Length: 322
Image (cartoon, rainbow, N blue to C red):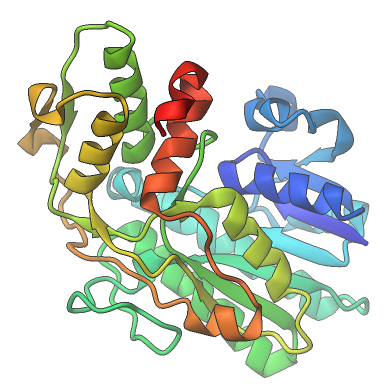
């Protein structure tokens, strides 16, 4: 089996590549500029030399076509595009273009090719928006509240349209928040972990955050890529919510992080209005019951275990506390 992972050096792309290699796949991976990419996540997993790496601009049809022709995949995983909700307010055009155009280009190529290809699209819990503090499932209506959410919702419906119109094997994975040591430092979870570990190591600093009352469903990224693969092994293409089903506030995330390191978070954390977004979800929680029934997939790690894993990667000497 051959797989093409678009956005292979990201958190999810790297763990997915590792998973597929372990399953005996020939893995091809794209980045916008392979020659200029650090490949830091792939190197962290020691798999950068095991993957066929090619450059691909998702919004350039010729570039996408060339990547598909060169890799000749049985499965395509589209994990590319601008990935930050906060940054999408500052770069809405880039966010929409990198997410929607890439998905549309791949769907068009699949429609035109004679070889059947199975396609996974990284949809997002951000598509749902506010849902009245209720867990969202596959039937929950979309009401995105950020340019990122709007882009993901558009790509999601594009996949649905091509699946229903042309019979393509195309799936949307509606993933809720999932973290790991490979998460980029600009994301709030990694920001919290890094600051807390530095403080525990003796550095004097304060951690500034925005809203602490937001509620999220945090899972473990290496488990979530397994759900992606399982979707493409089904007899029929379907969309799935992938989540833990457990909801916690950001304040709780902060508290558990500092408690794990033997610190009182109130002494080191403050909030700033400068870090507030134009719009933000108050509550985001998933209902993964369909994935449990049909994919036999259930998240094993909840928020506390996710925090423990991220801290242990940074400070192995305190792993016993986790």
